[in-house]
Amino acid sequence: MTCLATITMTSLAVVFVGMTSLLHPVPKLIWNASASVPIGLYAVKPTGVHHVGDLIVVRPPDELAAFLEARGYLAKGVPLLKHIAALPGQDVCRTGRRITVDGVTVGQALDRDHLGRLLPTWEGCWLVADQEVFLMNWQSVNSLDGRYFGPLPAAAIIGRADPLWTKEGH
Picture 1 (cartoon, helix red, strand yellow):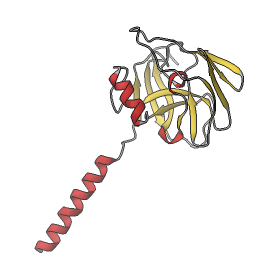
Picture 2 (picture 1 turned 90 degrees about the vertical axis):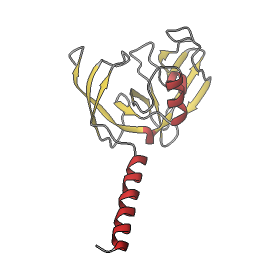
Picture 3 (picture 1 turned 45 degrees about the vertical axis):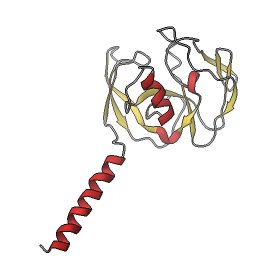
Picture 4 (picture 1 turned 180 degrees about the vertical axis):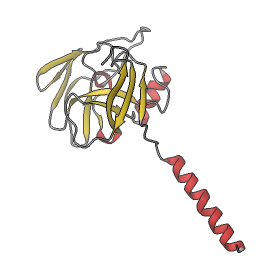
């Protein structure tokens, strides 16, 4: 192999390795340790069309990920498991602590977390835009979700979470 070929191949290998470090690997399995959805092992499946009620795996946007890490809620790079509560065109409101979707109450927000720290708030109504989703684990009163950070970009969705084994046997 000539010197030029060696340099070219080495350069291409370095570029390839460097590019793969920029990509976010897509998990195939995820262990959920949070009580906001049943604790257990979930398969991550590709999604096409999203539906209200789908349990999805989502990579928090950078600002949210930094907040979650700073508060000790979630390590950086760890995805969230949340249900889709509203899709584009639906109206999501927070009035005080009450959360509604299209005028139907879906839950309440808390003022403080389990350590007594104030939680983020937003007030008013938000028409979920194209390429956004509103995520909320409505069955869990203390889930850290859209009640506190509003809609997220749909591009943050990694896939649908299908339970393989949960502590509750689902």
